[in-house]
Image (cartoon, rainbow, N blue to C red; front, side, top):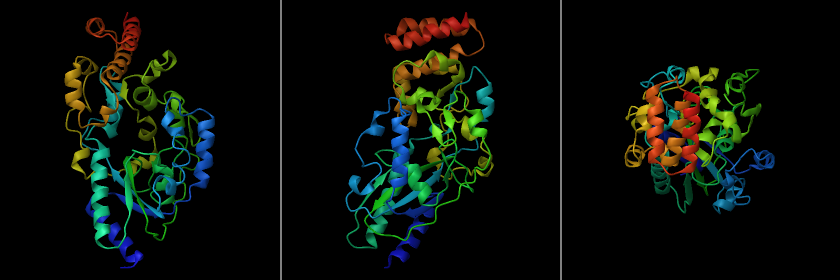
Length: 348
């Protein structure tokens, strides 16, 4: 079987496994390497020290996986149309806003399982196939690779945008030792629009296509393990895990398609739940409710820290103050206590 015939089969298999798009590209990331160096030099990665590890493996795929000649990039829609309207949740101060990607099961496992099955099919149709699959789990330049593979363009908010699917999708890759014909890179259609820049609550998009992660609510509530700076707490509002504001205002998301992967659908009611209810969870309940969720990326203390900020930003309520004081007597983590004290101060 020729590589071109195999490529057609892979496109077919991708559809069968419910991926929204698939594209093929080479391993030249030299331009992206310079952009990454500039981003790191500006310290925009904050405490995400893993972004500067691994030497050049992030921008030279053949160093990460020897023998790699091409990369197959896949995307899968994750938006569930049956959830509570996200803007309505953001405007309801006593509700908890959780980024839409985290409402279903953990995409890392779902996506990787699908990629491995496709790789196994490839292996049945060619000799000496060597590969490695990735889903947000290694030093891989996922968005630049997907952009090169024609899956969309990187918008001013630094997320990937597709003309037919908006930006509500996950990305995964198969590093391959087969040299495929590469697909055409998509043009950039952001134009003069700056909705995402204007909508960012903390002004984390410091310039078009430049994100200072240290200011980003997704970074502050997930990657950041310690104290959330006071100067950002009001802007965080009721966002307790991630932030979607830049996507919610993107005009291209009027073309977003609902997910056809049932595992990504919201099934625990976290799309429309009160901050007080989540704050009442014990650590045991937190672990049980999030064991198969992307929320598992944070620990219980981060969970309480984030919700405490949300409660501090809620309408003043005696019930909230009592809940904060009760939890303060239950926890020992000083970071959590510091955020609870801040919340009580906002409520009094």
